[in-house]
Length: 100
View 1 (cartoon, one colour):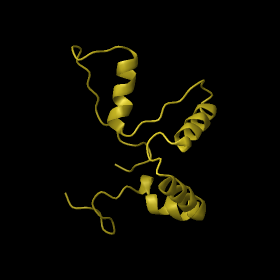
View 2: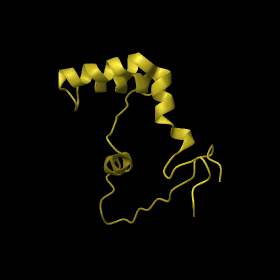
View 3: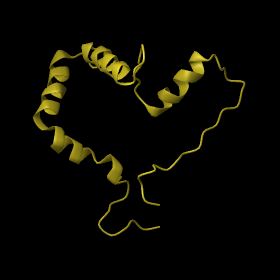
């Protein structure tokens, strides 16, 4: 199937990172540069700040960030002590805002 006119393959209008970058502008670039200069790319202080803000937003006592969608699926399975024996499968679900 060919992409619709004016759209490239892989472009998702719901997740338009360039539009987000334009909207957030200099504060986003400053935050990225701060992390780059610190060298704390993994588990730096910004991660703790993000997790605290996410927990407050979700009205939860804790929040745990992860590096990928795979990790996001594995973490609750580990927390519930679901090992490799049970079969667990998930199917992709289209975004409700994405035209079909």
